[in-house]
Amino acid sequence: YREEYLDKQLEVVEQESSKIAKTSNVLFLSFSLLGLGLSFILAYSLARRIRKPLIRLEQACKRLAKGYLNGKVEIKTQDEFEELARTFNKMVSSLKEAEEEKRKRNQFIETITQGIEEELILLDANSKILWANKPAIEHFGVKLDELIDNYCYLKDESSTRPQELCAISKAINTGNPNTVLHTRSDKEGNKTYAEVSVYPVKDATGKVVQFIHLSHDVTERIVMLQYLNMA
Image 1 (cartoon, rainbow, N blue to C red):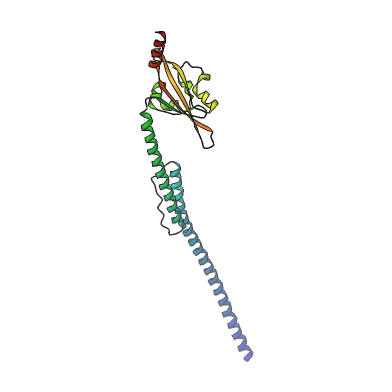
Image 2: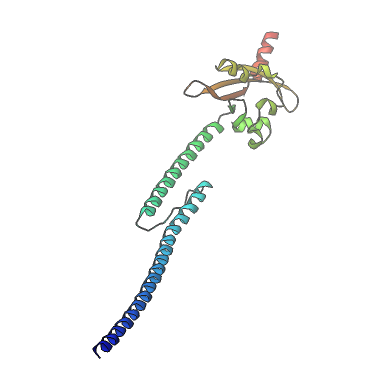
């Protein structure tokens, strides 16, 4: 009888142990799934938190690349992204200030040069036109956009000078300022004279990088001298 009782008790214990094991497996599986779900939610939230400021910074960089300097990046994450946005905004402000300073400087130069009655042209080291003031544009008879990146002797149809006598060629060869007298024709076909001076612009190493081409009409002076020589 005692052995039969012990067998029953042992069977009960085994059944309970089996139930406990099954319950443990279920709990383990449940906690595993819960942990996996929480990890997914945390990863998704973290990805969204990182992605949003990155998108804002990317959009701001694209606007900056297009020359848009009035926008700022607003990021309030209290982390490295906020610090990065603050640094980006400081950089944009510095660029904006530099651009405004450049605009004012160019406007100042434009005001001065446009007031010069002589024809003033800025050439690159290859004698191509970079800029011209109003009297020079009027002389060529075309818009400034049509002058840019062209050789002045190709656009100056009124000039009868050969290229080798050009003051620019001599300035290139010598690296020094040079002045020559050019013969031109006005709209009526009358002969006119222009005194052309070319001044090399050198960089810090002494290399000529640009030329200032200054031309003014001296027809009255030449005609007067010719008249006096004939008298």
